[in-house]
Image 1 (cartoon, rainbow, N blue to C red):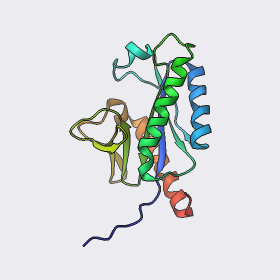
Image 2 (cartoon, one colour):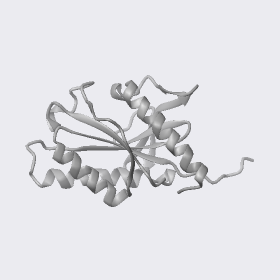
Image 3 (spheres, one colour):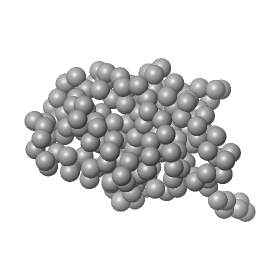
Image 4 (cartoon, helix red, strand yellow):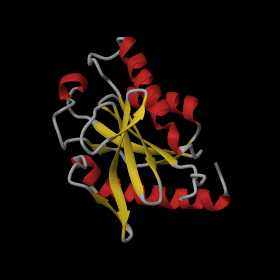
Length: 181
């Protein structure tokens, strides 16, 4: 019989996108209030891979990946996704921006072997975690690189995203070696 093992903590990564610099600032501040300091920030890039979000978020969206200093429990993804949903709603309720969804916060977890995202939408390749939240392994780490699956979103196939996740993976490996949680 297989033995149940302790699972090491994982690196929390959040994709933040908006067309409003002030909404980005607000989101980063709120995330740090709830999740601790940011360790790494990727370069913002134009989110042009789909028009799916234009109806609720407007056009000319910028997206940025961030990684947090403090490692989290692998089973924390539903709690964090519900938090990011609440933060999005909180900003929308202020009426400061013309869009119904001025900010999108997509949390994910990075391990040495994969990067997974949380979602509220079920699909054949997603696993239900509880509390209305599913997880999707968006990228796998293989032969020194992040590799997409057939279902991987177009923006997560970009070299800039892979470069950031490689940097984040290196940071995560360092944190594990330090015994940090």
